[in-house]
Amino acid sequence: MNNNKKRSERASKYSPIIYAAIDFIVVALITVIAFFAAGAMNEPTPTLWIGMILYTFVVSFLTVLLLLAFGVYGVIPKSFGVFDYVRMVVISLAVQFIGLIPLEFVPDDFLVMGDNISTRIFASLLLALLLPLSRFVLIGVNILANIIFRKDKVRTLVIGAGGSAKVYYNETINNKSVHNKIIVIVDDDPNKIGGNFSGIPVKGPISDVAKIIDFYEIEEVVIAISDLTQERLREILDYLEPCMVRVRRMPLLAEMNGPNDTKVIDVDVTELLNRKQVKLDNSGIHDMLNGQVVMVTGAGGSIGSELVRQIFAVRPKQLILFDIYENSTYDIQQDLMRKMRNENINDVELITLIGSTYNEKRVEQILKKYRPNYIYHAAAYKHVPLMEDSPMEAIRTNVIGTYNVARLADKYGVKKMLLVSTDKAVRPTNVMGATKRFAETVIQYFASTSKKTQYCAVRFGNVLGSNGSVIPLFQKQIAEGGPVTVTDKNITRFFMTIPEAVGLILQSSLFAKGGEIFILDMGKPVKIVNLAEKMIRQAGYIPYYDIEIKFTGLRPGEKIYEELLLDVTEHTKTSNKKIFIEAKQTVYPIEKEVVEIQKVFDMEDNEQIKDELKSIIRSYTSPEEFNAENKQ
Image (cartoon, rainbow, N blue to C red; front, side, top):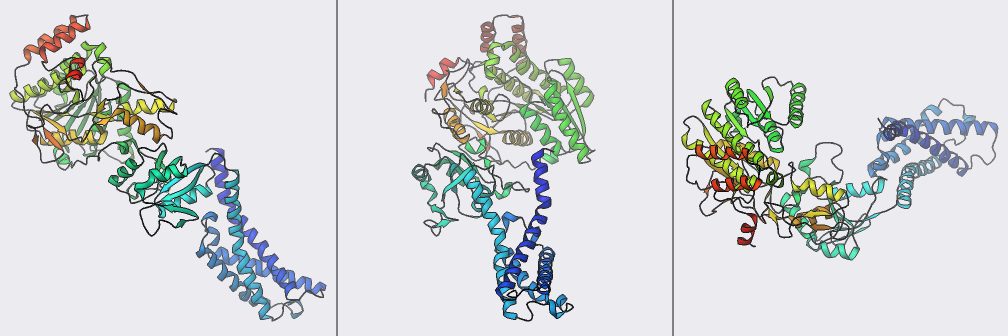
């Protein structure tokens, strides 16, 4: 535990004692003032002094005792409110009269105030006024100190004039680590517009927020609407699009689970996209995979590890994690083992194996021993520029590895095998895309010949947060002060989240009958330069001023834009309106092509290898030809 936390805990532990001591002193002073105001001490004698001291002690002690009994000292000082004030007033009035009871046993000579009821009422009212006031004075001093001594105040606009705005306002006032100063609040409610919120002007409507930001010279925006829908959030973010401000928000009600959920958070990258997140109904997945033997290749990767987690949740009998890379595979294995220990899960056998799908003997050894019912084939090389420089390795893993798994799945009676593919397989312009298209033809070929196994492939775009995604790269570049590198100002990509990708994979495996290529309706593609600008603003910087955006030129094999369907007029809908099936292509034997492509391992020249790949995948073309033919 660090020193700051220890000091905070000590302050929290002893603050009731401090306030009790302050109350005792305040009551004593007010009581003494009442004595002199009543004229009881005009001719002081030793007896009168003793009587005053005795009475003062009794009243002070009783006041503190009653405040303690009624839980006043359990109130957090900075949250002291009207109800607590009234409670202290009632207690203060009651003390003066409850204090008469012990004084019945005190000699009359010591009763310096005698039975002067009006004086007692005066003392009670003075006490009721000044005792709670000590709380507000201390709170006010703290607020004033924060305002005076806080440096680098960020001019802040808050969207929403409700409860969440009040929570954030209190945070800016009471938390010394918050360096925001709320200048203006914006709301759509006509009853609030034109008024003030804790002394802060309320303007509106929200659609005018860009003008309001400019007028008040705002540096940061906090969205404080607790019941905000994702659709409305995106609409507000669109209003903020032209503004050079950082955007943060209070958590939504649906996101709140614990005591720290009132903290302001950054707008998530997924909220910067131009579409709703797709909610996939995965009903039926449990019935399909529960109690089965399931194998995931590439289990340590971004998609593979999430597949493993989601499949684990439906409790297969055995879950086989297979990957060539030991570090990430070990990490997901340990995560699941901790979960099994913590939740006392003992109905899933976790099997973690290291190896390559290119190693046919290793794959056969595993399938022969464990006999998986379902295989999710996510193992692949996916980095476009790297595969341009090492095309033989892309062929080795993406083509031959897929062929090995598919052939052996049929041999050992796997029920279903699903290939994780990519939008880059459509009219490929690079080795990675061409090898993934080859892998799709492998799947479709075995789907046409196998009597035991149902094969399918799932095709989607870039996955946010995955290894190699542009998002982590931009975040790192922004953290380093720039520049943010974009290959071309016109380049666009489809994006989806990892949960969306995994939901698509699992549900597609449920739909699969054999040979399908499933595609997710991913909405409109995102312009990468616009995404970069939004991320820079979200980080609190101004694009091209604080953080430069540098255009580096298209990388080898890179398209200006990607496609998901060859012919969108011929696709087939599934029962899920967000999932489509590409029109089936003519299936031809691939055994000869697989033999031919294996010859490239003897070639040393990358261009020769690419030419051989082009002779097999006829849709494979150069990026220059593709971009020239498809200018947007």
